[in-house]
Length: 102
Picture 1 (spheres, helix red, strand yellow):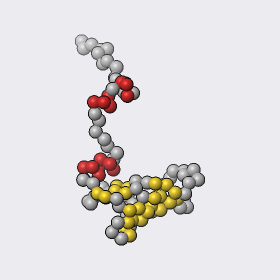
Picture 2 (cartoon, one colour):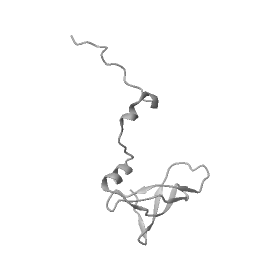
Picture 3 (tube, rainbow, N blue to C red):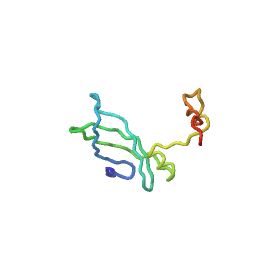
């Protein structure tokens, strides 16, 4: 993971490699989350450079608890009963009773 280069107590700069096409855009918004204490997060500005390099300029917006930060970093969310409703697009598995034991 690329290192954050601190610019004062609240701002940072980072250079990352991005293999995706930007379709002619030069600027975009991003998302950063530290996975080590103090678990700061940010929505930095991404500036496209040459050879798939990206300059990331951001300001830390706050901190999260360890569990929240790690869940955000891996994009995890807890499922609820409502996630398993057919009206919301969930398709139940077919019955598994098609074979009988002998």
